[in-house]
Amino acid sequence: MQVHRIMALVDPTLSRQVAFERALQLAHATGAKLHLFACAELQEESSRVAADRILLEPLEQLCTELLVLAREKGVSASSEIEAGRDWRSAAVAAAARCSANMLVKYSFDHSELQRQLRLTSDWELLRNSPCPVLLAREYTSWQHHRILAAVNINAGDGAHVWLNNQIISVARGLVEATGSELHFVNAFRSNYERPNAEELALRCGVPIEQVHVEAGAAAEVISGLVEAIGVDLVVMGTVGRSGIRGKLFGNTSEKLLDNTHADVLVVN
Image (cartoon, rainbow, N blue to C red; front, top):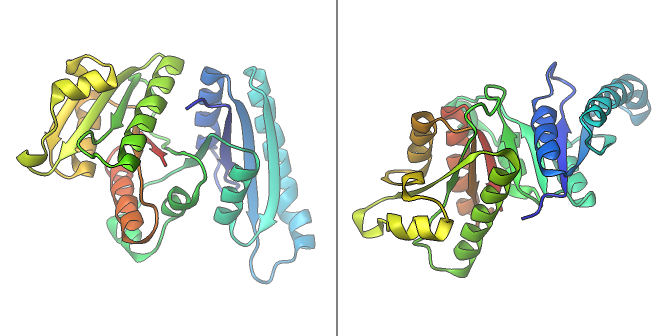
């Protein structure tokens, strides 16, 4: 996957724009254009006239400041601001309009109870985004220069084969752009499903020392490896994004987020 345009979600409630920082870093590394999107969320009683005066003007000022920072880094950047009652749907629509190859959102820690009680904005964007979603964490500055890609080489159906190829392609592209070291992980449940490490290394194009085949639930295996080897970014994927399969995937990615400090890029 070639990254030509990265869309960063600007959150007016935050003092630090983590998504912008990560998107700017990647746009500078890959040569992609940067698009900023901000949505002033209206309450039921709010009018768009009031939003223009009270909500949109500060957002315009914030985006202007961020655009200056981007251009100082030599990154071509644009911005888009709107007011609405559902910023998540607005962000998905904006990503489609600008033909984004990647959507970057800040993600903070949630408790397991918070995840169970309601659908988070992370899960909604992962489910509905037209492009891969990078959930950026404020804890990491990518100091390890190490990327971990999660694949399942035993899956033989066409959708999973395509997804594995996408994950490998995206991970390799980011490694080349950022000068990072690339590792692969394949979690499995039983010895009947145990993948061949040599075959995995060959298919992914890395030394066998950078391939990890471990038994256990995917989220637990990946989070343990993130801490063990020092990972800045996890690249993973999903085929089914609706119904039970979509919810299970959301649970896996969110568990990973809440148990590590690494960024997570979800390829769809």
